[in-house]
Image (cartoon, rainbow, N blue to C red; front, top):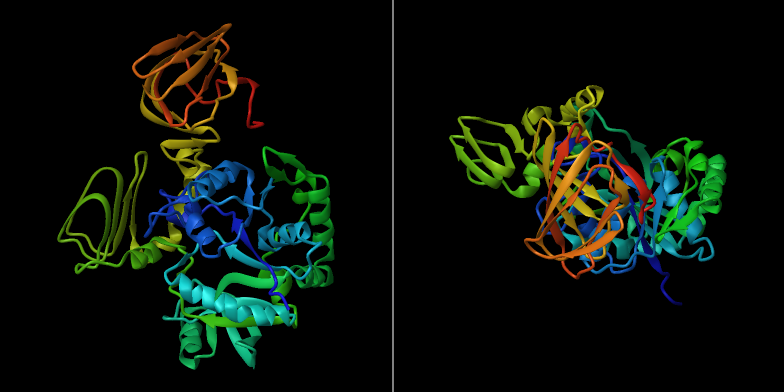
Length: 465
């Protein structure tokens, strides 16, 4: 009998507020590099050699496809949610798209976790296949190494195949309860990774969450294809109640099984976890970027722009970005989200995006801003094109740094190469395109009475904005 097909289903939602200022709402932690040359998303996709399905939000759809392109992966599908409704809905969207293949196994993985031993993970997946084929919803339990209060726990029940039946799911415990769990040896951390058949998942969802299944069907049926993405119907998704896979099904079903595994797993849920992943040096420090540390111990020190110097500090997280600096006691790093909430309440853009702002066509970074002017570095990826647009309150000067630019300026179309420039007067309809095979970089100097990002009138846009 042929082995069932396994389709990786990558869940790429979330804002990663505990890892601010590196992780922002528009560029969260799954798209960042930590202890690898690849991002967390790229590492996740690379763990299983099959074309994945990815479920993400609208803001991140081009980030997803660009990062997959960088590692040579073509996804089966990228499903775009207008608003997040939890992992249960995301898994159901994927299952409905595979409904004609009910025996297909879905390997559901969050995109923002780290696994230090991917071979151990693959072996655990192999162990889980027989359980999934036998009609179990399999989750992967991580053998705990400490009495961690930031993770949910799974109590193992009777042996089953290469794993165990699940006796109980437990929410994040207090310190005393976590210590008791660790002492008994009968509990695993809940990794949030699952393996189950398409048919069984849809059956169990229909049993426990029939309203959500109906809404998911409507969202797909009333959705539409756009630039290679499946964009779900907004109204159908907004009417759903958000639920996790655990709350929707796993805590209710009698089909739950767990395969324990030791694989160096982390949900990368705090700067402390990043510090542990980085392998502290003899002083207990993890240092990234241009950092000079004097008499500093047990710290995570990171500078992504400029020199960071510390003297006589202990147990701190210091992260310096181009537009924001975080200083926090490592023991309080779970509370960094409170700072992000305060920034959002104050209307600060730093809560949403960094100095480098990502766009479907590439990115821009503000280099200098003052009264009536702004200077930006703009990168347009090969084949990328900005919207056909105009500004009411500012004029722009463009200087090509590298690459070739095709510039529409009113009725004129120009081809500009390195060190050539042009001028766009306020009110003129214009567009910037990169026709080449290499990134195009330009310096843009804006001048006028107002240089905010909202002074833009889009006439035509390739990316449907």
